Length: 555
Image (cartoon, rainbow, N blue to C red):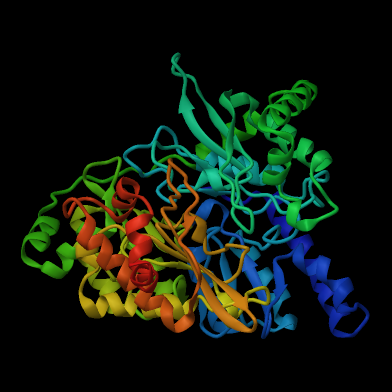
């Protein structure tokens, strides 16, 4: 993975020094909260309901054991012993004291990490496929490109005060595991007929109060044109994007109001102006980055321990069937570590659990870990002979829940338990659903079903692209939850359709149970997933299950 240069280390240290002085001025009263706010946001510090929150960048979700151990140290020393992994492949600490945050940032700098641009109207953490460099369906590892974009966008003088926040995601595989079409810019690495590497470029995606699926801006962009083309997109948006209304300031609204053809015309004009200014230095930098992402030297060994455990241990077999994915090397597997133990807070990991994952990566995983946008942790390279030992260690740490992609593998934002913007709770709803279907012993029979929960219209829980999406709102001081159906965050990105009136907090779980039972009754066979059944039959039978009283009244 990318290793900080002396310049990187000096840059982060200087930013931390500046922020330490700003914190001191806030504490002694020299700065008001309003004056301090833009300064803290530039360094990833939010003011939530009960305390400050620090959001730490994990660029494109990649880290090693040293970084994970340092994240554990921060949780233990300056927070309440845990961290929360987010849908942007970051980690949040919800309880730091303001006076301690500069020390936390210095500790991050020791291992090549920071919190720069994890907030504010700037280019945020660049995300990528969490199976990058390991997936069997990969054309190219997207992480070097993501790192190039990170370096280009960090402290970019033109893009520090955009009309609104700006998010970029990159994939290098056929399957979309990064929801690229829900981003301001989505990039997919592909090859043209001549075998040349380039990018399919999407623009104008986003969720929030006005969800939109990104549209194709270029079908094939040569690899060497990436940075000037991205600069042209953001530069065009910076001039054209609305600043009179923050709810209409995202690039998705700019594309919607002007049309994709007009945006394409303006971007191409700006690209023609910018391209001559790029002499090829960016490609030299990229080549240096790519050298740091050379794949490990995968070992070869008999797979007997894996085969024996799979044949004899039903608990291991269930975990292997659910939490393992195909690796580019047939002797290895990709391990998804679920942070969704039934009844736990989705995405939370204790300091001890972080150290266990760091130890496993170091011992069995070529010292690599990934954070997924689905709030789980990945060991991307594990030899199959080591899987029984990995599973045993995860079981002991409470990290071996066999539910990846199932109904309890829920994405949920912090909601009203933490967030100052939230209008309803998310975490208790997720916990109730997970515990209920574990009690019913149904989730493996149900199969793949993605539930995503947001506690406000900002949609940090990605509810719009959930097979079942749940949005918590405030209705006259009472929590009310809307349900959407048919969303999809993969290559066929689809915004879910609202089913009808909302439900009270105590009504959500029974409503989900009725939906699931309807699916089990309606599916063509056990292999047909919830989403496939919904697409085959449409909303009507599911709406009838959700609102049985309406059907009874109509009869």
